[in-house]
Image (tube, rainbow, N blue to C red):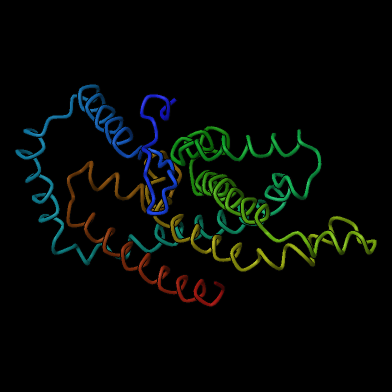
Length: 271
């Protein structure tokens, strides 16, 4: 349709031959983005005046958090460890379950189109479900506390690692897999020796990267009663106890920084 509205440009080469060059779609895409931005601006009632006049309040609150209340640190340790335990356990279980889910979603490994399509749909559905929403649902089922947060993180990890992993599996070189099947191996055996060895480094790297993000996500799950430091942050902001909130955020930033550095070191070894 685009080529019919904007016909390709004909270019005459020095040897006399005429070739066609398609018109760039960049102007059309830019126009559509601008139109979408305008509609979004009007729909959300976004106001730049309010943004620039009230932005100072943000720095006012941040200023109240500095210096943090160091005496509040003993109360932070347990919720902080709860957050780390939620993140690690949810990421660990989710990464393990993501492996068979990715295999079932790989069209080059599973010949049944119904199983592949259904698994991809489930992974897509889990990805579109916000972690806060899944944590809120989990609190209704499993009660308040870290268990609900662990379940929410596990579901996100399954969807995130599962998608990246099945895409990696579908893009591997299948020559060795087919050769092993021809030698009499089962599809599971052929997958183990020919395919899994190729995707293992990226699988471990993706799982570690997901764990990094999950530590940050777990910090806000307390807002829906899923435990961790999010509950303390919510209480501190509610009581306007900004120095204590500053202490919580400082401890969380240091923890996430250390985890990211360790994770990055191991991910560089794997890639």
